[in-house]
Image (cartoon, rainbow, N blue to C red):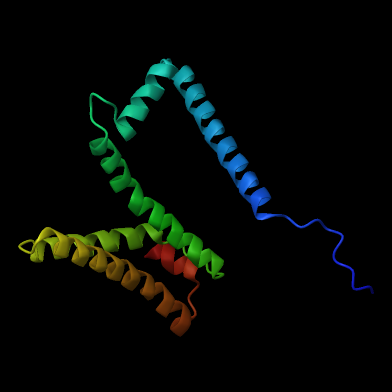
Length: 162
């Protein structure tokens, strides 16, 4: 064996970024094409429908820009974080598909805190609610972890049941 470097070309960071950008662009274009096809099949004018979707999600000059964008981010953030939690468990070699239950447990904990501590100033209450939501979701997920470690229950089964 020789000490020569591998015959495979090294992939630069710029090439990886370009590839990720191309994949993202293809996904967005494919999604828009699927939306247009769906609108056409339903007899809805695609340009008008896409404009309404954009205005509803991001606002415009007449509606205002921050209200719809804040609503979109407020609705999307828990779903994105729940999806990330499933990805983290997959990276650890586990198959936790109980993200929805953990989301609901966290939401229930945050709501209970808001009901009990609603008299606190908004910044403090918000911080408490976020911490409570994290703790509620983590405790719900810990049940599946405990069942796996102590009882040997497959996490797929326990997270489905939870």
